[in-house]
Length: 298
Image 1 (cartoon, rainbow, N blue to C red):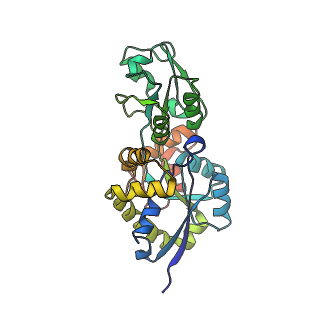
Image 2: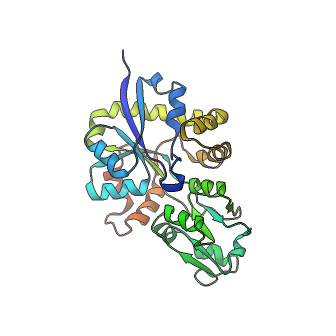
Image 3: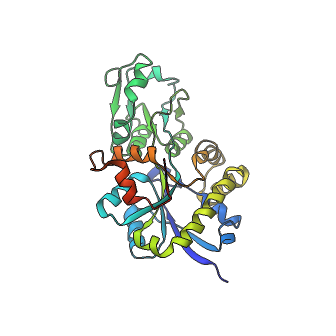
């Protein structure tokens, strides 16, 4: 009996961090035979751009998309056509990345900080600085760009002294000579940074195959998290990571992959507060319409 074909798309971070995939598990899981053991032959396709991925889902040339939650939610609110069947990462706190010479939060007095606007809006940034005797907006200038890539670019170009960045961007900035402030607390986050998405029609047609995929991907994440050397090798071979970048990715980012593969309701609430805070009905109504049965927890 032949293997069932399944096409899974993923993107990479744009710009300077363009080699970084949010969930690279599939490549290692395929090498280990985890998907084929469940009767699947999974094709992992890098497809850059969310609109292109939605086009392929809509025209049935792909079955699943691994996509950042804020893009997935916005598309659902616009189209009502997609469904989440899970999430491989519900949360991943940002790093505070700074120019060399800045050692602690207090050193930001008289300096500038960039943070994605919608992220900053729901994070308790003022309280963190108040705890260090600083007033945000007075002692520290806050710049609010539209996206994380913009915050990264402002830091790299020298237009700001510090930036709150998702960990992958932070790793790239460290590779370029910037530093991380270790004392920064985990108060800025990117809720549902990796969602597992399909369309309502494909879900109806391929529910059994998706169940097998989720079981396999769950095992593959567990395999990745217990095989550091193999994962670092894969990151180098597949994504051209340097040894230092691959090690940081494994130790400080991939640990946030969750093998439960369900959507945490608390993170869903945070995501809605970022993307559509005035959406009628709240997160419970959103979950009932957007998330496949069995894919939500909490």
